[in-house]
Length: 147
Image (cartoon, rainbow, N blue to C red; front, side, top):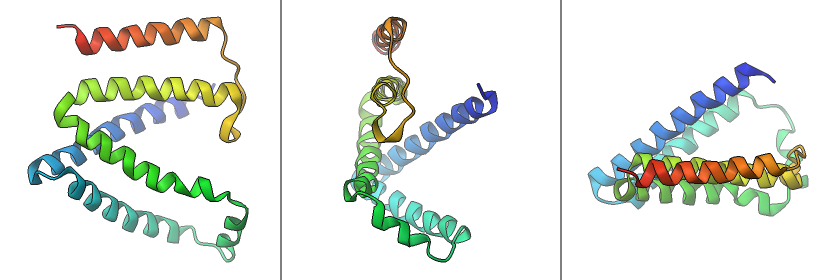
């Protein structure tokens, strides 16, 4: 187990929470979540191009011939995901959105790993994992609906 990777992942989760809350706030301030999201994605696209150009190598795009076209829809999926989260934040609140989002990620990650989808290393889900998932869902309920 590489502790530094897990710690970095926690940091990324914090950054993601702040990023999405910022996106939601922009949409709330201008009273249009779609436009706020579009502005974020345009800025993000410019940043991605700059980051990509720093690692440019001759012939790097030739590998795209082997990429299944369906995988390239991830950009649109990500845009819809961020829009939906930014739209939900003012309605549900940061705690409810992020706790349930994390639970969904855990359940999705369990399925991806169990079946080895998208080249994820196979890690079979066992009875203790299922119990953990049930406890997690119960924790989400307690955390979001208890007063």
